[in-house]
Image (cartoon, rainbow, N blue to C red):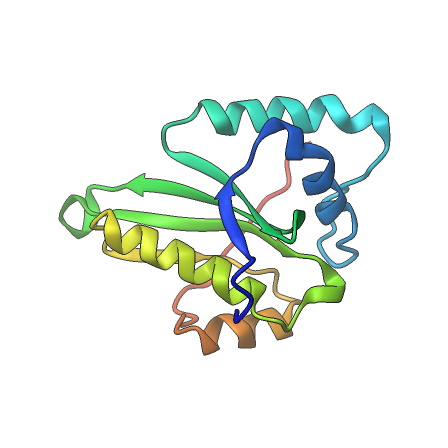
Length: 155
């Protein structure tokens, strides 16, 4: 992104209403996100669990004092690949009306730089199968669709 006013920083608890708005505005996600005040404690509990984890970080992308994007990173160390660590990027959201302006690319490049700086061997992410535009976006940034993911919703 050309705009030097974009700042990517660790999210603070006071950012929670803006972050919730980002997820609730995502009609395609299907995760049941909502701005209904009765759900706030669920988000707060999750935020605090992420903040307390040494392997997870929630970020906010801020432009001119407003939160315009968010993402979460998770570091996983495995025995395979000779005990390497990988950064998983999750929950990438950019404000709908600001997509296509480089915010998402700045967030993903931030993750890549962070992973390289920490000596990780891989950065990976998943994307909802219906998000064809997002798939093209990730491929433009150098990601390859190498695996097929599976999920099971538990009741």
